[in-house]
Amino acid sequence: MKRYNKLKIYSKFLTILIIVLTIFLIILVGYAIYTLYDNYTSDQSSEELMAQFENNYEEIEEGQISEENPSEGSENQEQPSEGNNNNSNPSKPSTKKPSTSSGGSSGSAYNLGTFYKGYKVIGIISIPKLKIQYPIFNVDNTATLKIGTAAIYPANVEEALNAPGNVVIAGHNYRNKRMFSKLYTLQNGDSIFITNIYGVTLEYKVYNNYTAGANDFDYATRETNGRTEISLTTCTSDASTRTIVWARVE
Image 1 (tube, rainbow, N blue to C red):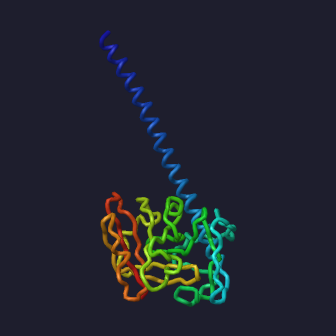
Image 2 (image 1 turned 180 degrees about the horizontal axis):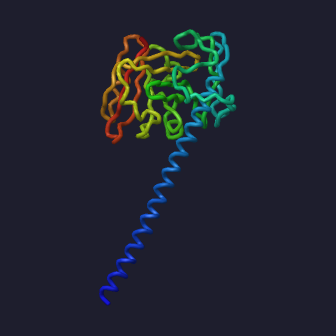
Image 3 (image 1 turned 120 degrees about the vertical axis):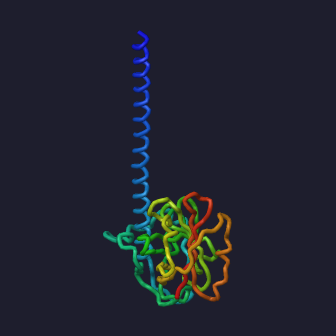
């Protein structure tokens, strides 16, 4: 009888354990499916936004630049042309009407205003080695960093992008291949392409890659001696430090 009772208790325990493990497995699979779907929809939004950005240039005369009201662009204003998938070949990005200037209002083209949930896209970043290409926003928050990157320094990031000085661009580390997750693998000489609102695309070459403290921001205010530079930044996998990459136009 005692042996029977022990077997009965063991059977109940085994049944409960199987139920718990099954529930856990269902939750794990569900989370994985949700993550894949969320990443897919985020990438789709990013691709559509870049397509819109590249098709939203207009020829201008110097001094004719005017800002659109961001509130009018709570979502993408127009659908991109079919088959325009920018992430499928993340090399040097093209622009509809490229300018030959190095930045600023003297260019012959200007983006009329591309917005996502009210946040303005001021450019596109492409890193061929990492096979990534994303929009650059002028604000960093949960919404913008979910589908792109953000220029966080200096204050006039829209004018500063592709102009002499240093612009800091931040992106998330999703611990996979998305966004800036593989930023730490960049090496000196690797190329980074930046397109700004004036249709100017410049190639930057990496010349420094290091790990800094979570609160270190000295890299942003460094002296560039009149050169056009960018600093890319993201948290490391344990979020205790940050990966910093410096690149400049040669």
